[in-house]
Amino acid sequence: MRRVALHLVTGLGLIAATVASWNHGHQPANPSAGLEIAGGSPWLEARPDSLRIDLGEFGAADGMHLRFTVEAKELQRGTEEWQDGRLHLEWIKNGECLERVYLFSVRGTGSFSETSAIHPAGPPGARAELHLENLGQSGRLRLSRFETFPTRVSPAARAGMGFVVLGWLVWLASVAGRLRSPGPWLAAALWLVAAWFLVIPGPWPKQSPLVGSFAMDAPDPPARALGPGDFVPAPSQPGALESPNLLLRWKIQLRPLRPLLHGLLFFVPTLAFLVLTQEERRGLTLAALLALAVEAAQWGFGYGFDWTDLVDLATDALGMLMALWVFRKWRTGKEGHLAGAPRA
View 1 (cartoon, one colour):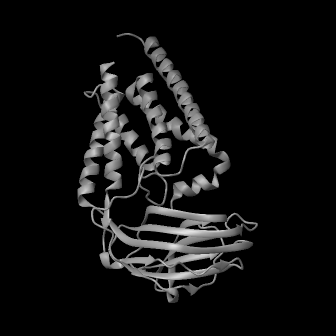
View 2: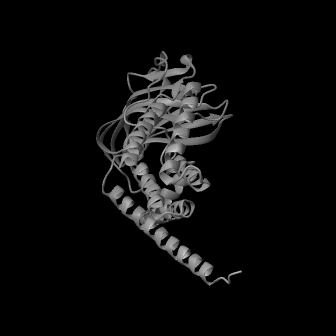
View 3: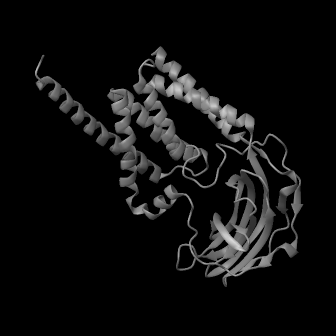
């Protein structure tokens, strides 16, 4: 019981350290490159209608910190899923669009805000263009507020996150078994690799703060205000924006198979945890912690929690049970083979 309590207390401490390291991991990179649209853009009618805003070059940066508010009035979606109010970034170099980054989509009536998010910076030498499009059948759309400045990862945050990862490695290995054996360490390392792709930062293209806002090491840089002359009418480019993240594209394209994929997604690591720990209780504990971490991170990043997440947890459990069944079959077969082997 004392061991369980110690694991619980140290685990909560590691969660707090992870949240603090993540939320304090960025700082402004170039104070002179800040931009702000305080007065808002003109209203866009559904024709379709589009505006382009040249944000310029951001120099050497790891990301772009964004805050914005989009307003819609009776905006009705068209026949296609992507025919709504849409905000996205384009990275332009030598007149060619190198990358399109989806930021937000809206329909109906209301005001919708992104209070703190960091998107990866574009290729070196590329200029950023902000595009606002009303592709709906009817209704109006405007960008009432937009703020951005380039960011970089703090060197102190890199070091701090390294200590946090090391702490998680030791904690997970102690949950997986005896620290003198290689199996628990390998299981803990596998857990951390899976967490990188599924939990933090996960498959999402943007980086969101965990439960709150990003806390920069320095104050927000002074922003250069953009006026009405900076809004340039532009031809609309209808079509769904495809994410550069392969895992996210698969998730969208294979949405009907989501329950099956969730089960398979947890079948493989659970089986690996069971083989490495050689204990059902410890292996299943690691798998359950990974499933809970995925759902908790989605909630912490602001994606919420609803009935689909309950379905995800149920299919995760199914994948774990399948892995347990395969592990028991494998272990029974292995023990039977050893029992039937001739003795020297």
